[in-house]
Image (tube, rainbow, N blue to C red; front, side):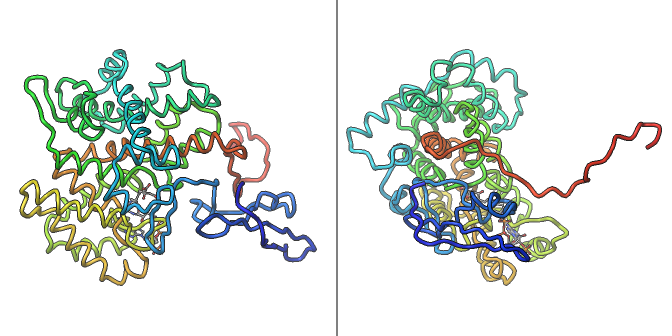
Amino acid sequence: MSGSAKRSVTITLDGSNKSSTLPLLDGTIGPQVADIRRIYGDLGIFTYDPGYGATAACESKITYIDGDQGILLYRGYPIEQLAEHSSFLEVAYLLTNGELPTPAQLRDYEMGVLRHTMLHEQLRQFYNGFRRDAHPMAVMCGVVGALSAFYHDSLDINNPEHRKISAFRLIAKMPTIAAWAHKYNSGQPFMYPRNDLGYAENFLYMFNAVPAETYKVNPILAKAMDLIMILHADHEQNASTSTVRLSGSTGANPFACIAAGIASLWGPAHGGANEAVLKMLTEIGHVRNIPEFLSEVKDKGSHTKLMGFGHRVYKNYDPRAKIIQKACHDVLGELGIKDDPLLDLALELEKIALNDKYFVDRKLYPNVDFYSGIILKAMGFPTSMFTALFAVSRTVGWISQWAEMIEDPEQRIGRPRQIYTGPTQRDYIPPGQR
Ligand code: SDX
Protein backbone atom coordinates (compact mmCIF):
# COMPACT_ATOMS: atom_id res chain seq x y z
CA MET A 1 0.00 0.00 0.00
CA SER A 2 1.64 3.24 -1.08
CA GLY A 3 -0.81 5.46 0.89
CA SER A 4 0.87 7.00 3.97
CA ALA A 5 -0.68 6.69 7.49
CA LYS A 6 -0.27 9.96 9.44
CA ARG A 7 -3.56 9.77 11.31
CA SER A 8 -5.65 6.94 12.68
CA VAL A 9 -9.17 6.14 13.81
CA THR A 10 -9.79 4.24 17.04
CA ILE A 11 -12.80 1.99 17.52
CA THR A 12 -13.71 1.01 21.06
CA LEU A 13 -15.96 -1.93 21.85
CA ASP A 14 -18.83 -0.87 24.17
CA GLY A 15 -18.77 -2.61 27.54
CA SER A 16 -15.16 -3.75 27.19
CA ASN A 17 -11.70 -2.26 27.47
CA LYS A 18 -10.93 -3.41 23.92
CA SER A 19 -10.13 -0.89 21.21
CA SER A 20 -8.55 -1.00 17.81
CA THR A 21 -6.47 1.79 16.32
CA LEU A 22 -6.81 1.73 12.55
CA PRO A 23 -4.34 3.69 10.39
CA LEU A 24 -5.97 6.30 8.09
CA LEU A 25 -4.31 6.11 4.68
CA ASP A 26 -4.10 9.01 2.24
CA GLY A 27 -4.47 8.60 -1.51
CA THR A 28 -3.32 11.36 -3.85
CA ILE A 29 -6.90 12.69 -4.09
CA GLY A 30 -10.20 11.52 -2.62
CA PRO A 31 -11.30 10.38 0.83
CA GLN A 32 -8.87 8.83 3.32
CA VAL A 33 -9.37 5.12 3.96
CA ALA A 34 -9.30 3.35 7.33
CA ASP A 35 -7.14 0.23 7.06
CA ILE A 36 -9.38 -2.24 8.90
CA ARG A 37 -7.28 -5.37 8.35
CA ARG A 38 -6.48 -5.67 12.07
CA ILE A 39 -10.03 -5.13 13.36
CA TYR A 40 -10.92 -8.86 13.65
CA GLY A 41 -7.68 -9.61 15.51
CA ASP A 42 -8.16 -6.64 17.86
CA LEU A 43 -11.92 -6.79 18.48
CA GLY A 44 -13.14 -10.14 17.10
CA ILE A 45 -15.62 -8.32 14.83
CA PHE A 46 -16.08 -7.96 11.05
CA THR A 47 -17.27 -4.81 9.25
CA TYR A 48 -20.54 -4.95 7.30
CA ASP A 49 -20.95 -3.14 3.98
CA PRO A 50 -23.37 -4.90 1.57
CA GLY A 51 -22.69 -3.68 -1.97
CA TYR A 52 -19.33 -2.30 -0.81
CA GLY A 53 -20.65 1.29 -0.95
CA ALA A 54 -18.17 2.49 1.65
CA THR A 55 -15.36 -0.02 1.11
CA ALA A 56 -12.09 0.49 -0.76
CA ALA A 57 -11.33 -3.01 -2.06
CA CYS A 58 -7.94 -2.12 -3.50
CA GLU A 59 -5.37 0.57 -4.21
CA SER A 60 -5.42 1.81 -7.80
CA LYS A 61 -3.68 4.45 -9.92
CA ILE A 62 -5.89 4.09 -12.97
CA THR A 63 -9.22 5.96 -12.68
CA TYR A 64 -10.52 8.52 -10.21
CA ILE A 65 -14.18 9.53 -9.80
CA ASP A 66 -15.50 12.36 -7.65
CA GLY A 67 -19.21 11.53 -7.53
CA ASP A 68 -20.26 14.79 -5.87
CA GLN A 69 -18.40 17.00 -8.36
CA GLY A 70 -19.07 14.80 -11.38
CA ILE A 71 -15.35 14.39 -12.10
CA LEU A 72 -13.82 11.45 -14.02
CA LEU A 73 -10.03 11.18 -14.55
CA TYR A 74 -8.17 8.48 -16.49
CA ARG A 75 -4.63 8.41 -15.06
CA GLY A 76 -5.25 12.03 -13.97
CA TYR A 77 -6.51 13.32 -17.34
CA PRO A 78 -10.12 14.70 -17.32
CA ILE A 79 -12.49 12.66 -19.47
CA GLU A 80 -13.62 15.87 -21.20
CA GLN A 81 -10.07 16.56 -22.49
CA LEU A 82 -9.51 12.97 -23.59
CA ALA A 83 -12.89 12.94 -25.34
CA GLU A 84 -11.94 16.10 -27.23
CA HIS A 85 -8.29 15.42 -28.08
CA SER A 86 -7.50 11.72 -27.79
CA SER A 87 -8.34 8.44 -29.55
CA PHE A 88 -9.51 5.13 -28.10
CA LEU A 89 -6.19 3.35 -28.68
CA GLU A 90 -4.27 6.29 -27.21
CA VAL A 91 -6.57 6.07 -24.16
CA ALA A 92 -6.01 2.29 -24.11
CA TYR A 93 -2.24 2.93 -24.02
CA LEU A 94 -2.73 5.50 -21.24
CA LEU A 95 -4.89 3.20 -19.10
CA THR A 96 -2.62 0.17 -19.54
CA ASN A 97 0.75 1.96 -19.29
CA GLY A 98 0.01 4.97 -17.07
CA GLU A 99 1.25 7.77 -19.37
CA LEU A 100 0.22 9.26 -22.73
CA PRO A 101 2.32 7.68 -25.52
CA THR A 102 4.82 9.45 -27.77
CA PRO A 103 3.82 9.23 -31.45
CA ALA A 104 6.29 6.35 -31.91
CA GLN A 105 4.94 4.51 -28.85
CA LEU A 106 1.38 4.94 -30.12
CA ARG A 107 2.32 3.59 -33.56
CA ASP A 108 3.93 0.52 -31.94
CA TYR A 109 0.90 0.01 -29.70
CA GLU A 110 -1.53 0.31 -32.62
CA MET A 111 0.56 -2.23 -34.56
CA GLY A 112 0.52 -4.53 -31.54
CA VAL A 113 -3.28 -4.41 -31.53
CA LEU A 114 -3.64 -4.73 -35.30
CA ARG A 115 -1.49 -7.90 -35.30
CA HIS A 116 -4.08 -9.69 -33.16
CA THR A 117 -7.46 -8.71 -34.62
CA MET A 118 -8.11 -12.09 -36.29
CA LEU A 119 -9.69 -15.08 -34.52
CA HIS A 120 -8.49 -18.68 -34.78
CA GLU A 121 -10.50 -20.35 -37.57
CA GLN A 122 -11.74 -22.97 -35.09
CA LEU A 123 -13.44 -20.15 -33.17
CA ARG A 124 -15.56 -19.43 -36.24
CA GLN A 125 -17.03 -22.90 -35.78
CA PHE A 126 -17.74 -22.05 -32.14
CA TYR A 127 -20.42 -19.57 -33.25
CA ASN A 128 -22.36 -22.34 -35.01
CA GLY A 129 -23.20 -23.84 -31.63
CA PHE A 130 -25.40 -20.86 -30.76
CA ARG A 131 -29.00 -20.32 -31.84
CA ARG A 132 -29.21 -17.64 -34.52
CA ASP A 133 -31.16 -15.45 -32.10
CA ALA A 134 -28.62 -15.79 -29.26
CA HIS A 135 -28.11 -12.48 -27.42
CA PRO A 136 -24.73 -11.02 -28.43
CA MET A 137 -23.70 -10.87 -24.76
CA ALA A 138 -24.28 -14.62 -24.43
CA VAL A 139 -22.03 -15.12 -27.45
CA MET A 140 -19.40 -12.74 -26.04
CA CYS A 141 -19.32 -14.59 -22.71
CA GLY A 142 -18.88 -17.92 -24.49
CA VAL A 143 -16.37 -16.94 -27.14
CA VAL A 144 -14.16 -14.82 -24.87
CA GLY A 145 -14.08 -17.58 -22.27
CA ALA A 146 -13.17 -20.03 -25.04
CA LEU A 147 -10.11 -17.95 -25.98
CA SER A 148 -8.30 -19.53 -23.02
CA ALA A 149 -8.58 -22.84 -24.89
CA PHE A 150 -6.52 -21.37 -27.74
CA TYR A 151 -3.68 -19.51 -26.07
CA HIS A 152 -1.91 -22.01 -23.84
CA ASP A 153 1.31 -20.21 -24.83
CA SER A 154 0.44 -17.15 -22.73
CA LEU A 155 -1.51 -18.20 -19.65
CA ASP A 156 1.20 -17.69 -17.04
CA ILE A 157 -0.23 -14.63 -15.28
CA ASN A 158 3.06 -14.04 -13.47
CA ASN A 159 4.93 -13.65 -16.77
CA PRO A 160 4.85 -9.95 -17.82
CA GLU A 161 5.17 -10.89 -21.50
CA HIS A 162 2.17 -13.25 -21.20
CA ARG A 163 0.17 -10.46 -19.53
CA LYS A 164 1.15 -8.06 -22.32
CA ILE A 165 0.27 -10.33 -25.24
CA SER A 166 -3.00 -11.40 -23.55
CA ALA A 167 -3.94 -7.72 -23.23
CA PHE A 168 -3.18 -7.14 -26.92
CA ARG A 169 -5.18 -10.24 -27.90
CA LEU A 170 -8.22 -9.26 -25.84
CA ILE A 171 -8.27 -5.58 -26.87
CA ALA A 172 -7.72 -6.56 -30.52
CA LYS A 173 -10.19 -9.43 -30.74
CA MET A 174 -13.18 -7.97 -28.91
CA PRO A 175 -14.38 -5.89 -31.92
CA THR A 176 -14.10 -8.97 -34.17
CA ILE A 177 -15.97 -11.17 -31.66
CA ALA A 178 -18.73 -8.56 -31.22
CA ALA A 179 -19.10 -7.84 -34.93
CA TRP A 180 -19.26 -11.57 -35.71
CA ALA A 181 -21.95 -12.02 -33.01
CA HIS A 182 -24.06 -9.50 -34.93
CA LYS A 183 -23.31 -11.12 -38.30
CA TYR A 184 -24.28 -14.50 -36.84
CA ASN A 185 -27.58 -13.04 -35.59
CA SER A 186 -28.30 -11.58 -39.01
CA GLY A 187 -27.30 -14.67 -40.99
CA GLN A 188 -24.71 -12.69 -42.96
CA PRO A 189 -21.15 -13.97 -43.56
CA PHE A 190 -18.45 -12.87 -41.14
CA MET A 191 -16.19 -10.06 -42.36
CA TYR A 192 -12.50 -10.39 -41.55
CA PRO A 193 -10.76 -7.44 -39.86
CA ARG A 194 -8.78 -5.07 -42.07
CA ASN A 195 -5.46 -3.78 -40.75
CA ASP A 196 -5.54 -0.69 -42.95
CA LEU A 197 -8.42 0.70 -40.88
CA GLY A 198 -8.45 2.36 -37.46
CA TYR A 199 -9.82 0.52 -34.43
CA ALA A 200 -13.36 1.95 -34.41
CA GLU A 201 -13.44 2.12 -38.23
CA ASN A 202 -12.45 -1.57 -38.44
CA PHE A 203 -15.23 -2.50 -36.05
CA LEU A 204 -17.85 -0.59 -38.07
CA TYR A 205 -16.49 -2.21 -41.23
CA MET A 206 -16.81 -5.76 -39.82
CA PHE A 207 -20.24 -4.88 -38.46
CA ASN A 208 -21.72 -3.36 -41.64
CA ALA A 209 -19.79 -4.62 -44.68
CA VAL A 210 -20.82 -7.62 -46.81
CA PRO A 211 -18.56 -9.57 -49.24
CA ALA A 212 -20.84 -8.69 -52.16
CA GLU A 213 -19.75 -5.06 -52.38
CA THR A 214 -17.14 -2.61 -51.18
CA TYR A 215 -18.03 -0.69 -48.02
CA LYS A 216 -16.62 2.65 -46.91
CA VAL A 217 -17.09 3.52 -43.26
CA ASN A 218 -18.70 6.92 -42.69
CA PRO A 219 -15.94 8.97 -40.98
CA ILE A 220 -18.55 10.75 -38.85
CA LEU A 221 -19.71 7.42 -37.45
CA ALA A 222 -16.12 6.19 -36.97
CA LYS A 223 -15.31 9.34 -34.95
CA ALA A 224 -18.51 8.96 -32.88
CA MET A 225 -17.73 5.27 -32.25
CA ASP A 226 -14.21 6.13 -31.13
CA LEU A 227 -15.61 8.76 -28.74
CA ILE A 228 -18.17 6.35 -27.28
CA MET A 229 -15.38 3.81 -26.74
CA ILE A 230 -13.24 6.40 -24.92
CA LEU A 231 -16.14 7.22 -22.57
CA HIS A 232 -16.78 3.57 -21.68
CA ALA A 233 -13.14 2.47 -21.31
CA ASP A 234 -12.82 2.42 -17.52
CA HIS A 235 -14.68 3.51 -14.42
CA GLU A 236 -12.88 2.66 -11.16
CA GLN A 237 -14.13 -0.35 -9.16
CA ASN A 238 -17.59 -0.83 -10.77
CA ALA A 239 -19.36 -4.19 -10.53
CA SER A 240 -17.83 -5.78 -13.65
CA THR A 241 -14.32 -4.51 -12.89
CA SER A 242 -14.62 -5.83 -9.35
CA THR A 243 -15.74 -9.15 -10.86
CA VAL A 244 -12.62 -9.23 -13.04
CA ARG A 245 -10.40 -8.40 -10.06
CA LEU A 246 -12.01 -11.01 -7.82
CA SER A 247 -11.76 -13.68 -10.55
CA GLY A 248 -8.15 -12.69 -11.25
CA SER A 249 -7.24 -12.82 -7.55
CA THR A 250 -7.60 -16.63 -7.68
CA GLY A 251 -5.00 -16.85 -10.47
CA ALA A 252 -7.57 -17.52 -13.22
CA ASN A 253 -6.33 -16.68 -16.72
CA PRO A 254 -7.17 -13.25 -18.18
CA PHE A 255 -9.57 -14.61 -20.83
CA ALA A 256 -11.68 -16.32 -18.15
CA CYS A 257 -11.59 -13.16 -16.00
CA ILE A 258 -12.75 -10.92 -18.86
CA ALA A 259 -15.54 -13.42 -19.66
CA ALA A 260 -16.65 -13.06 -16.03
CA GLY A 261 -16.59 -9.27 -16.41
CA ILE A 262 -18.77 -9.53 -19.53
CA ALA A 263 -21.30 -11.62 -17.62
CA SER A 264 -21.43 -9.04 -14.82
CA LEU A 265 -21.71 -6.09 -17.20
CA TRP A 266 -24.76 -7.68 -18.86
CA GLY A 267 -27.06 -6.90 -15.92
CA PRO A 268 -29.61 -4.07 -16.49
CA ALA A 269 -28.44 -2.33 -13.32
CA HIS A 270 -24.98 -2.03 -14.90
CA GLY A 271 -23.94 -2.16 -18.56
CA GLY A 272 -27.29 -3.62 -19.65
CA ALA A 273 -28.92 -0.27 -18.78
CA ASN A 274 -28.30 1.24 -22.24
CA GLU A 275 -30.46 -1.49 -23.80
CA ALA A 276 -33.02 -1.03 -20.99
CA VAL A 277 -33.16 2.76 -21.61
CA LEU A 278 -34.19 2.22 -25.25
CA LYS A 279 -36.83 -0.30 -24.14
CA MET A 280 -38.09 2.19 -21.53
CA LEU A 281 -38.27 5.10 -24.02
CA THR A 282 -40.05 2.91 -26.56
CA GLU A 283 -42.58 1.82 -23.91
CA ILE A 284 -43.19 5.44 -22.79
CA GLY A 285 -43.75 6.21 -26.45
CA HIS A 286 -44.76 9.87 -26.16
CA VAL A 287 -44.03 12.94 -24.04
CA ARG A 288 -47.65 12.95 -22.82
CA ASN A 289 -47.01 9.58 -21.09
CA ILE A 290 -44.04 10.84 -19.05
CA PRO A 291 -46.01 11.95 -15.94
CA GLU A 292 -47.76 8.58 -15.67
CA PHE A 293 -44.45 6.73 -16.11
CA LEU A 294 -42.70 8.80 -13.46
CA SER A 295 -45.61 8.17 -11.05
CA GLU A 296 -45.02 4.44 -11.58
CA VAL A 297 -41.30 4.90 -10.88
CA LYS A 298 -42.12 6.66 -7.58
CA ASP A 299 -44.39 3.79 -6.59
CA LYS A 300 -41.85 1.45 -4.93
CA GLY A 301 -44.21 -1.49 -5.36
CA SER A 302 -43.93 -1.17 -9.14
CA HIS A 303 -40.18 -1.92 -9.05
CA THR A 304 -39.97 0.36 -12.09
CA LYS A 305 -36.71 2.30 -12.39
CA LEU A 306 -35.93 5.33 -14.50
CA MET A 307 -33.27 3.50 -16.48
CA GLY A 308 -30.17 5.52 -17.32
CA PHE A 309 -30.68 7.57 -14.16
CA GLY A 310 -28.91 7.23 -10.83
CA HIS A 311 -25.48 5.95 -9.96
CA ARG A 312 -23.80 4.39 -6.94
CA VAL A 313 -21.03 7.00 -7.09
CA TYR A 314 -22.24 10.00 -9.12
CA LYS A 315 -24.60 12.14 -7.06
CA ASN A 316 -24.23 14.75 -9.76
CA TYR A 317 -24.44 14.64 -13.54
CA ASP A 318 -22.29 11.81 -14.99
CA PRO A 319 -19.71 13.75 -17.05
CA ARG A 320 -19.90 11.04 -19.74
CA ALA A 321 -23.64 11.63 -20.14
CA LYS A 322 -23.03 15.31 -20.90
CA ILE A 323 -20.46 14.44 -23.59
CA ILE A 324 -22.68 11.77 -25.16
CA GLN A 325 -25.71 14.06 -25.13
CA LYS A 326 -23.73 16.63 -27.14
CA ALA A 327 -22.45 13.89 -29.47
CA CYS A 328 -26.07 12.79 -29.98
CA HIS A 329 -26.94 16.18 -31.40
CA ASP A 330 -23.77 16.26 -33.55
CA VAL A 331 -24.18 12.75 -34.98
CA LEU A 332 -27.92 13.05 -35.60
CA GLY A 333 -27.35 16.42 -37.24
CA GLU A 334 -24.50 15.14 -39.39
CA LEU A 335 -26.59 12.12 -40.37
CA GLY A 336 -29.34 14.48 -41.43
CA ILE A 337 -31.73 13.17 -38.77
CA LYS A 338 -33.61 16.39 -38.03
CA ASP A 339 -35.67 15.29 -35.08
CA ASP A 340 -35.23 11.91 -33.49
CA PRO A 341 -38.42 11.23 -31.49
CA LEU A 342 -36.45 9.10 -29.01
CA LEU A 343 -33.92 11.88 -28.39
CA ASP A 344 -36.72 14.44 -28.03
CA LEU A 345 -38.48 12.14 -25.57
CA ALA A 346 -35.24 11.54 -23.62
CA LEU A 347 -34.51 15.28 -23.40
CA GLU A 348 -38.04 16.00 -22.13
CA LEU A 349 -37.88 13.08 -19.67
CA GLU A 350 -34.54 14.36 -18.34
CA LYS A 351 -35.87 17.91 -18.02
CA ILE A 352 -38.96 16.79 -16.08
CA ALA A 353 -37.02 14.34 -13.85
CA LEU A 354 -34.33 16.90 -12.99
CA ASN A 355 -37.07 19.22 -11.69
CA ASP A 356 -38.95 16.51 -9.82
CA LYS A 357 -38.42 16.42 -6.03
CA TYR A 358 -38.29 12.59 -5.96
CA PHE A 359 -35.22 12.53 -8.19
CA VAL A 360 -33.65 15.74 -6.89
CA ASP A 361 -33.89 14.56 -3.26
CA ARG A 362 -32.25 11.24 -4.21
CA LYS A 363 -29.56 12.95 -6.33
CA LEU A 364 -30.56 10.94 -9.38
CA TYR A 365 -29.02 12.30 -12.58
CA PRO A 366 -28.54 10.86 -16.06
CA ASN A 367 -25.65 8.39 -16.26
CA VAL A 368 -23.59 7.26 -19.25
CA ASP A 369 -26.34 4.86 -20.36
CA PHE A 370 -29.12 7.43 -20.67
CA TYR A 371 -28.02 8.82 -24.03
CA SER A 372 -25.64 6.15 -25.33
CA GLY A 373 -28.48 3.96 -26.62
CA ILE A 374 -29.95 6.83 -28.61
CA ILE A 375 -26.73 7.56 -30.46
CA LEU A 376 -26.04 3.84 -31.01
CA LYS A 377 -29.54 3.33 -32.44
CA ALA A 378 -29.06 6.35 -34.73
CA MET A 379 -25.78 4.76 -35.88
CA GLY A 380 -27.69 1.64 -36.92
CA PHE A 381 -26.90 -0.75 -34.07
CA PRO A 382 -29.65 -3.11 -32.90
CA THR A 383 -30.53 -2.60 -29.22
CA SER A 384 -29.21 -6.07 -28.37
CA MET A 385 -25.72 -4.95 -29.43
CA PHE A 386 -25.50 -1.94 -27.08
CA THR A 387 -24.03 -3.76 -24.08
CA ALA A 388 -21.71 -5.76 -26.33
CA LEU A 389 -20.24 -2.43 -27.50
CA PHE A 390 -19.86 -1.38 -23.87
CA ALA A 391 -17.95 -4.66 -23.27
CA VAL A 392 -15.64 -4.04 -26.26
CA SER A 393 -14.63 -0.70 -24.80
CA ARG A 394 -14.52 -1.72 -21.12
CA THR A 395 -12.14 -4.59 -21.94
CA VAL A 396 -9.37 -1.97 -21.88
CA GLY A 397 -10.31 -0.96 -18.33
CA TRP A 398 -10.81 -4.53 -17.20
CA ILE A 399 -7.42 -5.74 -18.46
CA SER A 400 -5.67 -2.65 -17.04
CA GLN A 401 -7.22 -3.20 -13.61
CA TRP A 402 -6.51 -6.95 -13.80
CA ALA A 403 -2.83 -6.34 -14.59
CA GLU A 404 -2.58 -3.72 -11.81
CA MET A 405 -3.97 -6.26 -9.35
CA ILE A 406 -1.58 -9.04 -10.47
CA GLU A 407 1.36 -6.63 -10.17
CA ASP A 408 0.26 -5.39 -6.71
CA PRO A 409 2.60 -6.96 -4.13
CA GLU A 410 -0.20 -6.77 -1.57
CA GLN A 411 -2.77 -8.61 -3.69
CA ARG A 412 -4.16 -11.85 -2.27
CA ILE A 413 -7.18 -13.98 -3.10
CA GLY A 414 -10.40 -12.02 -2.54
CA ARG A 415 -12.46 -13.70 0.16
CA PRO A 416 -15.12 -11.49 1.83
CA ARG A 417 -16.70 -12.68 5.10
CA GLN A 418 -20.34 -12.37 6.21
CA ILE A 419 -22.73 -11.87 9.08
CA TYR A 420 -24.39 -15.28 9.54
CA THR A 421 -28.07 -15.23 10.52
CA GLY A 422 -28.96 -18.82 9.65
CA PRO A 423 -29.75 -21.72 12.05
CA THR A 424 -27.33 -22.58 14.81
CA GLN A 425 -25.94 -26.15 14.84
CA ARG A 426 -28.66 -28.84 14.94
CA ASP A 427 -28.82 -32.64 14.42
CA TYR A 428 -30.00 -34.47 11.31
CA ILE A 429 -33.70 -35.50 11.38
CA PRO A 430 -34.51 -38.86 9.74
CA PRO A 431 -37.08 -38.48 6.92
CA GLY A 432 -39.78 -40.35 8.89
CA GLN A 433 -39.58 -37.81 11.74
CA ARG A 434 -39.86 -34.56 9.70
C1 SDX B 1 -23.38 1.84 -15.04
O1 SDX B 1 -20.55 1.57 -11.02
C2 SDX B 1 -20.27 2.14 -12.16
O2 SDX B 1 -19.36 2.91 -12.28
C3 SDX B 1 -21.18 1.71 -13.32
C4 SDX B 1 -20.99 2.43 -14.63
C5 SDX B 1 -19.64 2.10 -15.25
O3 SDX B 1 -19.19 2.87 -16.09
O4 SDX B 1 -19.11 0.99 -14.97
O5 SDX B 1 -21.10 3.82 -14.44
C6 SDX B 1 -22.04 2.00 -15.66
O6 SDX B 1 -23.71 0.76 -14.63
C7 SDX B 1 -24.26 3.06 -14.90
C8 SDX B 1 -25.59 2.74 -14.14
C9 SDX B 1 -26.54 2.14 -15.16
N1 SDX B 1 -27.74 1.62 -14.50
C10 SDX B 1 -28.94 2.24 -14.64
O7 SDX B 1 -29.12 3.30 -15.26
C11 SDX B 1 -30.10 1.48 -14.01
C12 SDX B 1 -30.97 2.47 -13.23
N2 SDX B 1 -30.19 2.91 -12.07
C13 SDX B 1 -30.44 2.24 -10.80
O8 SDX B 1 -30.68 0.87 -10.94
C14 SDX B 1 -29.46 2.68 -9.72
O9 SDX B 1 -29.35 4.03 -9.80
C15 SDX B 1 -28.07 2.09 -9.67
C16 SDX B 1 -28.08 0.59 -9.72
C17 SDX B 1 -27.24 2.59 -10.79
C18 SDX B 1 -27.46 2.53 -8.35
O10 SDX B 1 -28.17 1.85 -7.33
P1 SDX B 1 -28.04 2.33 -5.83
O11 SDX B 1 -26.62 2.67 -5.51
O12 SDX B 1 -28.74 1.36 -4.96
O13 SDX B 1 -28.85 3.69 -5.88
P2 SDX B 1 -28.97 4.70 -4.72
O14 SDX B 1 -28.46 4.13 -3.41
O15 SDX B 1 -28.36 5.97 -5.18
O16 SDX B 1 -30.56 4.90 -4.57
C19 SDX B 1 -31.02 5.92 -3.72
C20 SDX B 1 -32.53 5.97 -3.91
C21 SDX B 1 -33.24 4.66 -3.60
O17 SDX B 1 -34.55 5.01 -3.22
P3 SDX B 1 -34.88 5.10 -1.60
O18 SDX B 1 -34.68 3.71 -1.03
O19 SDX B 1 -33.88 6.11 -1.02
O20 SDX B 1 -36.30 5.58 -1.52
O21 SDX B 1 -32.84 6.26 -5.28
C22 SDX B 1 -33.62 5.21 -5.83
C23 SDX B 1 -33.34 3.99 -4.96
O22 SDX B 1 -34.46 3.09 -5.04
N3 SDX B 1 -33.16 5.02 -7.20
C24 SDX B 1 -33.94 5.08 -8.26
C25 SDX B 1 -33.08 4.91 -9.37
N4 SDX B 1 -31.82 4.75 -8.94
C26 SDX B 1 -31.87 4.82 -7.59
N5 SDX B 1 -35.27 5.25 -8.39
C27 SDX B 1 -35.75 5.26 -9.64
N6 SDX B 1 -35.00 5.11 -10.76
C28 SDX B 1 -33.66 4.93 -10.65
N7 SDX B 1 -32.93 4.77 -11.76
